Length: 92
Image (cartoon, rainbow, N blue to C red; front, side):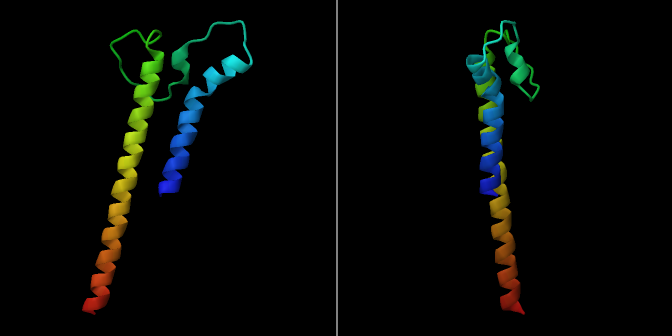
């Protein structure tokens, strides 16, 4: 579960900054919005063009915290299940 979550987080983090890296490598003379790389829609009460990197940081931090919480919850549930199975095998 931890490997799956780490791979998923790193893939999402890489995909969210890929357009900015691609703009540096292959500069195209056209204007694009920075918010096109944000895949999760949130409501911010600031100018999204000026604070696009802070919005990206907020999205990535929320993803990392959420994935860590999901992995921790899943790991605890698996540990509880193994404990219950062990207790039932002793009680039988």
